[in-house]
Length: 326
Image (cartoon, rainbow, N blue to C red; front, side, top):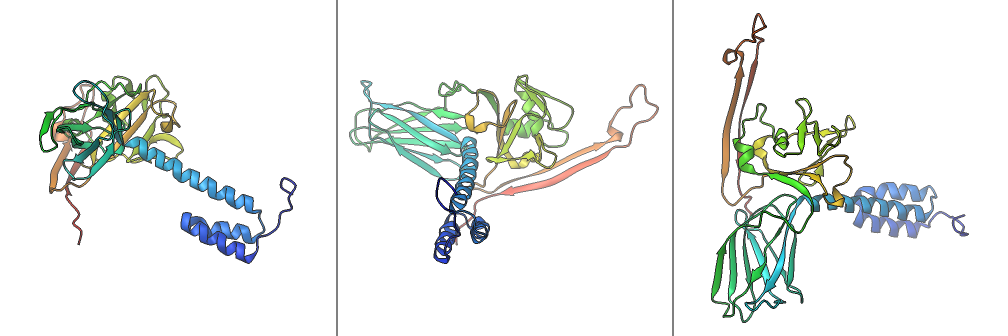
C-alpha cells in the first residue's frame, strides 16, 4: 500500500506508453525502467527513477554552465536614461560564433553561457548610432561587465571603442585568478603539464610533485578539478586529485577559485580549478615541441659519488583548424 492506494503491476498498454516516453527523454535508461515495471514495481518508483536521472543530467549541465563566462551591463543614452529594447550581439573573433540578447525595460542586458575567448560587441536600436567595441576578452568562470552609452543619431553611423573588460569584477565576490594561455605556453614546465601553474595564485601551495594542492588554507587532496565542465577527479582511488592533467598544447586557460565561488561548484573542502581546452578556429594553427632531460646536462650532487642516470625526452606536435561543412 502507498498512501492508502493498492500497488499493482502496470498493464501492457501502460508499459508501452511508459517506454515510449522514457525512450524520448532517457534512451539509455528505458530498458532498466521497463524491467522494473515488468517486475511489478509501483509506477511511482519509475517516476522517481526518471526524476532522479533527469536531475542528475540537469546537475551535470550546471557544472558546464559554471565553466562558461557571461557578459552583462546597463545601456543608457547620452543624458543617462536607460535604453530598453537595444539589440546586443557579440561575435567570437577566432571562430565567428555569435551570442545576442536585448536590453529589458531597466536597460539591463545579459549574455549567459558564453564560451571563453576574444569578442567584438555591437549594440544598435532605432534613433541611435550603432555602438561597436572590440578587444573584449571573456575568461573561464569569470563574468564580465560592459556598460554601454548610446549617442543620438542614425544606425548607419557608428561609435567604435577599443577596450577590454574591467579587471575589477564587481558582479561576483569570488576570489580567484585566471592563468591565461600566454602564461601556460611560456612558463618552463618539466613535464609539460599545466596543473602545477595553479601555484601562481597567492593562495595555493603544492604538496609534493603531483596534483595535490592546499588552497586558501584547506586540506590537501580536497580540491575540485573540472575540464570543460566535466569532473576529472581521481574516482579510481576516490581522492580529490587530478585524474587527467592535460598537456599545455591542448589547454587554453584555467581559473583557480579559492573562496566564495558559486554554489554549483561545491563538493570541495578547498578550492576549485576549471580548465578550458582549446577549440578550433577559422585558421589553421599548430606547434612543434621538444623537451630533453639528460644526466649529461646535470651537475653531480656534492655529497653523491655519481650522478643518477636520467633519460627523459618529450617530443610531439599539435594541429588545429576549422571543420568544414560538406
